[in-house]
Length: 58
Image 1 (cartoon, helix red, strand yellow):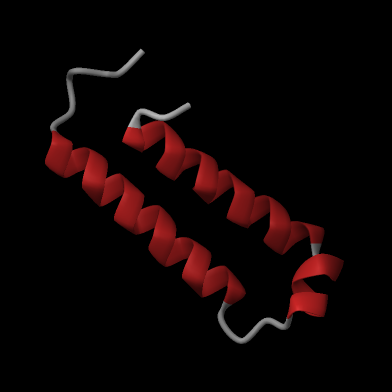
Image 2 (cartoon, rainbow, N blue to C red):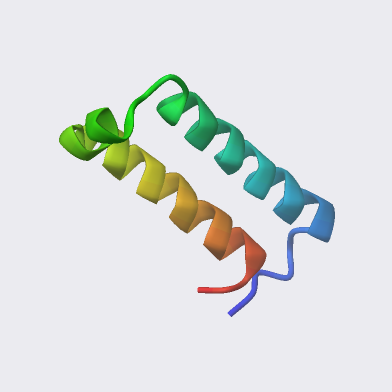
């Protein structure tokens, strides 16, 4: 169910913030480094889930 108390602009801001955080987590990281780091994987997946929830597609 979509939270109607926030605006589309706020939803978009949440998505953009999540994308920015994901980029900061993986910047300069090799594929092997990503695969070997459960911390980076979990942080990335958490932000991905936030962006999905903000978009209303969960």
